[in-house]
Image (tube, rainbow, N blue to C red; front, side, top):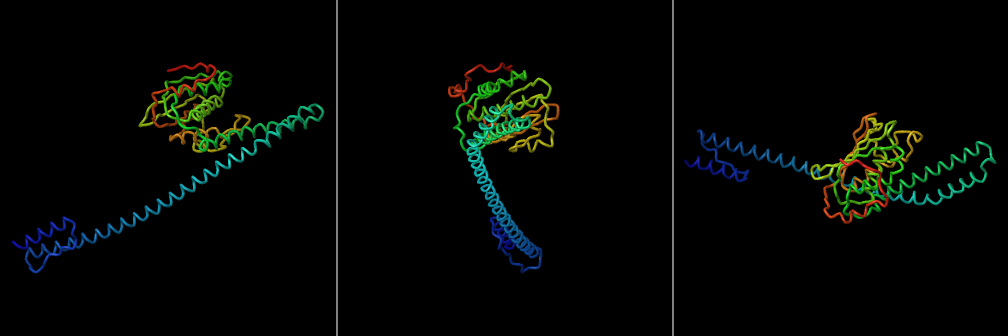
Length: 325
């Protein structure tokens, strides 16, 4: 029985993690053959484990290299974004005063010499004034874009219902001119930068009014809780967006229409994306040409019960009427 006990003891040692267990193979009977099979098994097991360890080490090295590469790229991207934001801020800030001077003197020329020059000169002056105004709008939007990350306010208790009221008040002229119908469900209270949240809703609702086609705009604003975050939606019945442009929609200066068709700088949705990302959320759109668009964005569920701070958002003048559903 000693050979059987040796095999049993060897098996227990292998089970415990030893791989250098070798049983004597002196006999030529069945026990000897069993011992030789046992030794071949432990040798093969040791070889396989060695290969697995080597493969695991190679994988760990590759993962570490890829992680370092990704960290480096993320660092470079963050640095590039910071440099871009600084450039946008400095460039737009430094352009403000010279542009104001150009616009002022051009307008002065237009008033002083109106009717005293030929028709072409009057038209050229008009083009110059219009160009300066468009450049001023572009600079202002660039400043807003650059300040989203660099000069955002601290997060505080925000009632999103009041945020929408403020945005609608700011859009009052466009709402009256278009006859827009606004439907809003009850919105949550969250922790956010109140000024940026107003900008976010104002840009998205403003786009829904602007890109309405021939129909009276109907805009539905809603929010629901979804897996630890709030999912907001702003749906309209406007002209819609071709699917081939959706991936580029949130890029800076991206325009899908001519300035004559729909005025604007092409920065509004880029600002929206930056605001949402600063708050830890995502933004996207679902749309079909001639069947309207629905913009979605998420914000973390940091619910606020105390709305005393949020009441600071109450508009100073009455907002346009809304249907609450």
